Image (tube, rainbow, N blue to C red; front, side, top):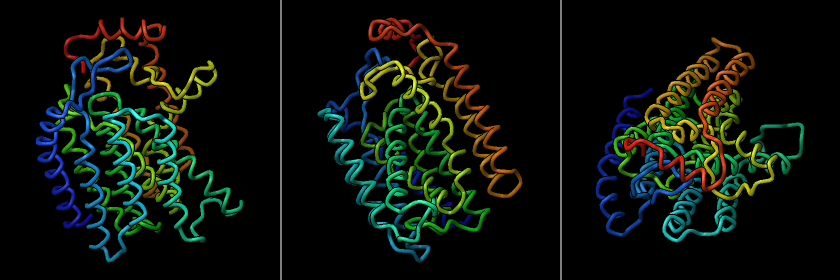
Length: 355
């Protein structure tokens, strides 16, 4: 950890915290408001669009970290993130069809992967075209699952904070990350994410006064996905999985269960594990506090693996048992799900302190 990186993280926090205030006022004047409905967990109309500040702060922070480390700016990553920010910002206002959004996400992922060096490999035993296809699909899934998991006050801020802190410490203890676009700047870039998460949490902690919107969740899913992929390219794939294991497990098991029931998985719903306690009457900060505790444990395990203190596979097994236990516990609080009607009843039963 460098003093320069700490200052960069502090600057990201201040720019985010101070920039979101005027942005919130502008979003209110422009009526960019997230209205409560049967599938959402908040009760009061809340401005959405914090990503218009958060994403540029992240991209500038990454670029400054790379230049300070003597590296080239990651233009493919920046172009992809900016494109997703624009398309997702339009979607926040006009509600685009899922398919154009998915195509734009795939194009952003393809742009980055297509420009990777040919010797940048994860699976040396298969053709590079198949490897890049598998990686691209996994990255595309992470972009969307991060968006799906952006449903409680403070939850996405906790994910950004834990991933940022985790990669910063892991890169520091392991002597850097040998992956394109981030590489030696990984420590400082992680601190930038920590700063942004702290600045956003001032506005997004329960009860939230501002949501990041798709303009924030889609680009941040894209950026965090690449950072986790960079760890995997560096041979630290267990650490990458650990850092986002809760989000990966909740979103993936929910998708699998909906597929098995024959539901239209592209349609909005309220069946994620993290949503069940809130539907049953828990407050957002109580649920997110539990998730934050789990995330802290996962970060500690990932750092232990990176430092050589813990064995990778047994540690991953322990982490999976912990996460699955929490997710099953959340589901045990759930109300019977009966589509929109049940969702409306659950919403009406929430306490006044809920989002």
